[in-house]
Length: 99
Image (cartoon, rainbow, N blue to C red):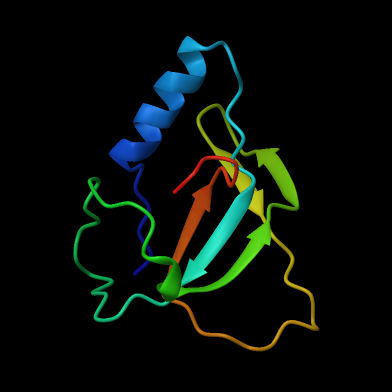
């Protein structure tokens, strides 16, 4: 089962950008392999990016599109030259914000 969640960390990021009258810039997808991740467990909104050692691939966002009044779609195209990898979690982030 696939799950999505908006972490509290993103809410702070959004509030900061809004207060500075700056747009959000979600520009990278991080693919991670998190040990013992239970895909059926609810996502903890207090969680943040996993440690860099659990990241298996990073890719700049290739396309952004609106998918309704309350939905935005971000996509990446992974080149065929990238070595195969396994992941069990994906994270959308602004790579210009320090971790």
